[in-house]
Image 1 (tube, rainbow over the protein chains, first blue to last red):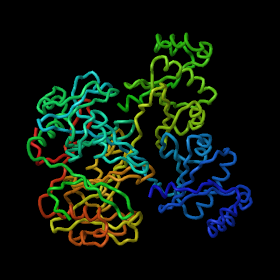
Image 2 (image 1 turned 90 degrees about the vertical axis):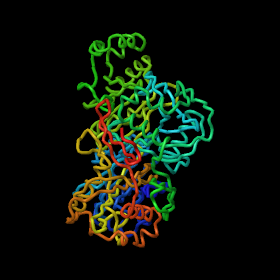
Image 3 (image 1 turned 120 degrees about the vertical axis):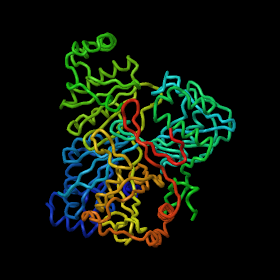
Image 4 (image 1 turned 180 degrees about the vertical axis):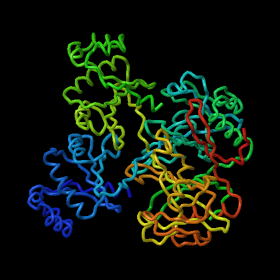
Length: 311
Length: 311
């Protein structure tokens, strides 16, 4: 779905109306008749990709002056309005920041931004906007890795909130927006395996998600989901990441739980006790089941694998 | 943490250097001596809020021309560089889009945007940037609500991917970025209760998260987490939301599972079967435990409540 939203022909706009007409003959000619045809003939229309929600996306790629772009945008919006389009998306790469102010002056609002582009959006109808919200959550993981001696893999960080506290904590990290493939974000289970390897050199396999917590306003307006993942180690010799860690070790689980910090902070106490429970007796978390959707997308379903009668 | 990042004194910059000097005398005078003092004396420095990651945030509020702003920005960055600052954040409200292009020309990149503002960021050191990534996930819910007759609450949507398919599906929705309070995002469990009420008029209580799935590139570059929530109904008379739904009803759970769509699509088949398993025998999902952190933040921990020996 996202790929079709972003797919776009190379040339970003046609200066010559008949080029546009050759792509969408019927609607174009309607547009030409009903709105100031002279103007359109002189300025052309923007190329855009349609989506299934009555939206159009214009992805600008080549440098253009605002004085040339704005007439194209205005003419195009007039045409899209007649066609019953609702949302107009304009994607401007960082290099085309010259167009940001003029596009805002046309009534567009920001939708989201990434380091290399800014997406603006304009809602044509008078009805309330149904433009989807931006991403709202960051996703992090903590890894509970225990060896056969009942010891848990713990680290002391050089920076961040735990710096200087002396607390031994689980290896943690953020789930990458880009995973193994540039076309796919990172799986939660894969992020846990990667972080443990990066921070401690320990190779481990994902077992279960034991718990997760949602918190809010953790980063600007955004919320945060943090998944406690249990991993089973395949190697035991620690090679700590010098840049981020002050220390790393295997620590008896009870010592980990008993740390004053973990006893004084209820959330940490719960997480530590859940890990301990898992290490001592039956505690069922959610297993990961990779599935492919009919559209060929890989997804992972996390669920209680024991209680669920397999299909 | 976020609030301190965004907190900012009303006047956004001091045109007169001694005003700034009175706030941070020592570092200011250092800056004056080492970098083009004449220029700084004429232009002043930007006010900024410091964070605990060696970053500074400038939140612009009042209209200013680029020709006045850029010298202030340059002088301020020189000063911050001397002070060992790393990340420089510039927050520009939509109304100050005139500053976007000039700020980009100073080497800033986009970080994130919301409808009303754009955040740009500049990394001062030569070392690799440790600027945190933007939010990466949208979060959705599906609600499994069953009455005492073994019937599940299902809906047919007027638009979206299921339009015209005839499929009866669970009520679904997106977790709001802003929850009951403007200062807090919406809880997953609260989103499920709200969506069921909005779509069907049914009042229900959250019981458990039965499963969740992560998928990628569901919306531009962003990933998506979808939580299947079980709710227990408190009312049974359906008042469907006219704007979004074609129909809503209570449907025998087996009929829901047996729908061809749910049989043909593996992810839907799993979710339907998990709901059925839950309705017939023991299937343990994750319960919600509200906790307050020591900093007074409300968080919710989701975990296997039965297997975990309570604290």
